[in-house]
Length: 429
Ligand SMILES: NC(=O)c1ccc[n+]([C@@H]2O[C@H](COP(=O)([O-])OP(=O)(O)OC[C@H]3O[C@@H](n4cnc5c(N)ncnc54)[C@H](O)[C@@H]3O)[C@@H](O)[C@H]2O)c1
Image 1 (tube, rainbow, N blue to C red):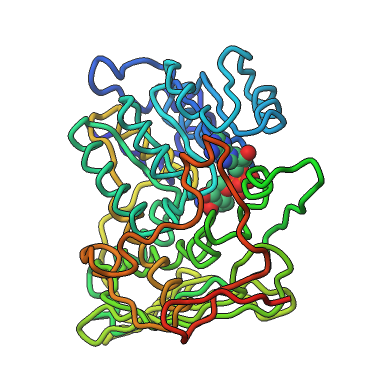
Image 2: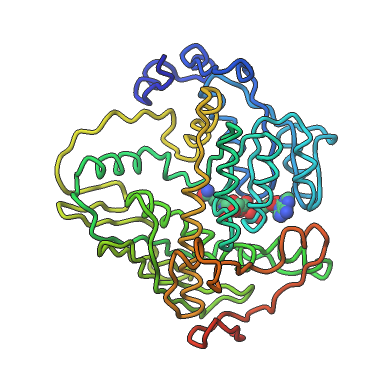
């Protein structure tokens, strides 16, 4: 039986989730036939306020009910807010840097992970080893060993029949899905090159207070430390790099990049990056990302092919092609990715996006290393060649260091300076 219902037909036939229950029959194997989907959350911060409501909505769209059966966060204030919001009993709420292990003792079937990215490989491994399905926010690592770990855990998940869905919502958004399908049908011919960009402002800064130790300062202000976020090229621009890899059907072979810092007053990240990503066969993608206020902003992906081109807003020139009907329950890719996660599990066809998101994350990290050092960096340096300096390079304190409380803040406002062998760090203000 076809479990997919087009959005048009869905809207026509029902406006209410209650009615959807009679349309959708997503029950697969007996152990997944329950109408209630038990979910837990690790990291109860900003993004979780989108992810959990989106998950609940996705359950409704599939005629199911979500039950939040466990919460974990490093800090009590974040935990308390989420516990109140989702009505979770104190006995199922866990605090601290080991809370990700404790929450796995609950009977959750699916775990959403929305902590800073440096924790993701370790947390994902624990979730998959515990036999639970995973929804992982992007990016999924901050260094090459982390990316390789996620790929390895992805293989383990396949063996165990577990899902790993990543928070790169463009992959489940009707506009991007349509462009991708048209490109695959030859609408713009062969892709020759393109530009992907995320140029915006600094999202937020969490200032240090006297009560904060180094560990708390780093985890609260993580968005501004490259050891925690992978720098904004990884944390934010990964969305656009992921589209480049997806539309081209491969990752880049090498990268020459540069970047710098002019305005930031916290952490140790650059303000901007510009990369030439070489995808082989003469195909180059220019990537640019910037977090600076008062400048021209643009977020999107542009591809030029032999017969036409795509623009970032879903528009396209080129040949008219016929594509198969694309069926989604929600126009919001962040909801639709949850729908695909749940449907895959209940149809016993768990979606596994570990490799693609690990490769997109590695693409960003390759760019960061090239910009920080001024070197040409190859894909093999990160993913295949143990002799390369970058292969085993890890970023800052490990998740185990955070668990042990053995964390030191790197020198603030000291950034990588390229051109001197491997990047040295120099003060900027
Ligand atoms: N898909 C998207 O469009 C999108 C948008 C925003 C953020 N994100 C991603 O979501 C993730 C979280 O970002 P955010 O904006 O919610 O950050 P945040 O700081 O608001 O939330 C992170 C939460 O994790 C907690 N935490 C930190 N370390 C922890 C640990 N070791 N164990 C348990 N809890 C821990 C923090 O206390 C905090 O509550 C990041 O990877 C970010 O890149 C994705």
